[in-house]
Image (tube, rainbow, N blue to C red; front, side):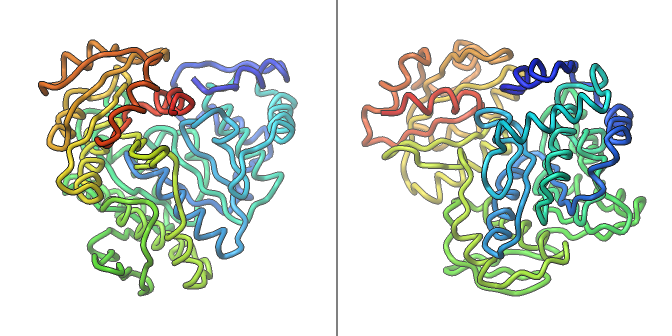
Length: 407
């Protein structure tokens, strides 16, 4: 489901399929019909399990501090497809997207693509027309067969790899890594964050097969903890305090810096420092009201990072979790990661196709202090007893629906 996509499809009378169909044949055909707009883009391609959005946010912040214009194609939508296609930090406009979708219609793409392929094509057409200096492209799912993988980037980026989208990408780290490393291109540097040992082995094997340089966090570049933090990679520099909290965000910051340096961009040290310090992505341990934090941890690896962030930022505290998740996620394993820092769990029903019921979450949570409620009561839950910190987590769809309820 891509919010507001149907409005644009109706507006220009174009159809697409809402199923997921991995493979590049259809999008490659579409790009040919459009005159290959993707080849005109100076792109950075980002795949991975967690940290893609944060790494893109950090890179975008640095680039803008350096006076370099940017385009971003990201998934999923925070509100609707306008925030998935951004120019210079601003959501794309209705006029911009109407022009792009009309271009797709005029190229004869009616009925040829899936919904996500259609949106990908719209993003490439938009960026080609507006020509930002650098475009940051996030894979929708996987990498090797993702529709974004028709680009040849200046650098490929994988912030992390963990189990997610198991039904589509396989049930092992090795299989998932094979999909993610499908974005590696011959001669193009690939920058990876802290990966599991199994993932490193696959990444190294794929890099040899493809013929691309591979740079790994902890081996080729790293962040040295301290006050202040120190980055050591293609350059060495001191970093100011980050708005984006948590040890995982230090790794994402290192990945962002090394990726931009490997992209061959001339970046003033001050731009890197200010960009890292000021970057903030919605729903990454974001305090949206006093004592109320939103974090989109929706799988075990992300939940583990959230737990570590809580332990770092709220030492010795136990928090009240408010959680709703999609049914296709590893629910029990995700909740288990949060139990060590939990005072209570409240599970919420939310009206999205594929959402797990609050009762299902309740039954899979092995913690005594837990309850179920409806979204209609969210404002009550989140605004009372603020002597305890509240962490609202799980599906981004839930976080979006709850934001307006916070008092």
